[in-house]
Image (cartoon, rainbow, N blue to C red; front, side):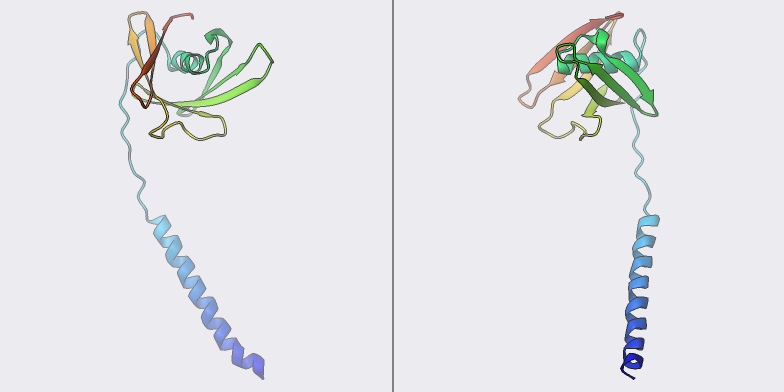
Length: 147
């Protein structure tokens, strides 16, 4: 007898939960993705793979010759084995015009206001990788084709 009294209450709670779930799903499904336009840069003498390699060489203070790059979709995966202790390091890079964002393979993108801003400039047969720090100081590393 008591079970019959609780049954309508159970139906009411269950149907309210289903309605809230449906409303939540509807809200998520109807969101329109934000469209971000990226500035196109035409490279003359270098590839984005070259720039990704030089970027990590510059940031990590490693020789660019030991750094390997592979592209997958819009990301460039960069790795190297440090000669001193044979430890492997993996990073990812993405480009937005001449801006470069990087992260550890499984870490956060370095895009906070405290992280350095990295850009590149192609001049003739050279690429400059420019790190600008939050105090506006800069580190500029220059690479030639084949470095």
